[in-house]
Image 1 (cartoon, rainbow, N blue to C red):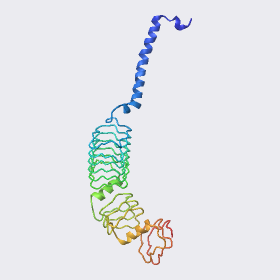
Image 2: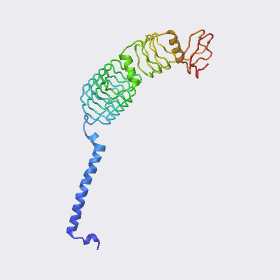
Image 3: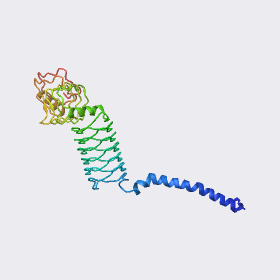
Image 4: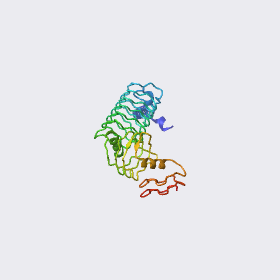
Amino acid sequence: MSNSDSLSPRVRAERIYLALVVGIPLLAILAYVIFALFLRDRMGGCPPSCRDHDLTKSSMVQADFHGADLRSANLASNNLLQTNFASSDLSFANLAGADLTQANLQNANLTAASLNDATLHSTDLRNAVLRGARLQAADFAGADLRGADVGAATLDGADLRGTLLDDSTLLDPRWRLVWQIVNEPANGRNLAGADLRAANLTDAILNTADLTEADLRGAILDGADLAGAQLELARLQQAGIDEGTSIDPKWRLVWEIANTVEANRMLRSVDLSAAFLGSAYLRSADLTGANLGGANLRDADL
């Protein structure tokens, strides 16, 4: 006879009771964990539970997503005019190319979100967290970033004109300098050695500025006033200059040489002193009588 057969009915009942007392709570905990990790975001309505949702085809103009969970949601290229995202979690969300004009993102979490090419005209971003966000070529005209955390964000090509900042705005020094240049015009600014790579300096007032050894690679200088600026050994590779850019002829020529490939270039008796021409294409160029004193020709193709 087995041991289980020898147990009295009372002992069996006690064991069953004990198993139920211990097992049911464990099963309940397991069920809750499964729900919390895998089912809650899918079973809840959107909003507020919009995590990982594809909302690219949803009409969201003036919609209310206050406090919503939009982590990793896809809202790319969506029209989000005057949409309320206050206190919402948009970390890792895709908002690339979205129109967020006059949207409310106050206190929103946009950590590591993608906002490349987004339109943020007059957007309320007060106290928002944009740490590590991708903001390349985003248009922040009139946006309110007071108290926002924009540390470690990528702002290459972003338009910061008319943007509101204050002392509590966390912004890398490089980008705060760009903001100052485009929002606080000043003649003769000292920018010697400044890191202005990929800065959007459209229509900036930089006349008579000291840009000696400044790094302007990839900067947007369309319409900027660089008349009389000191550009000795400034790096102008991939910088954008248009017909509206006011720049001394010497430095426009340096920019052309640094950014174009042209063989047999005629540079006879040209003043290229202190020009940064590293890696420039000067093959078969006629440099007879040219002034190259102090110029950087490292790795130039001569």
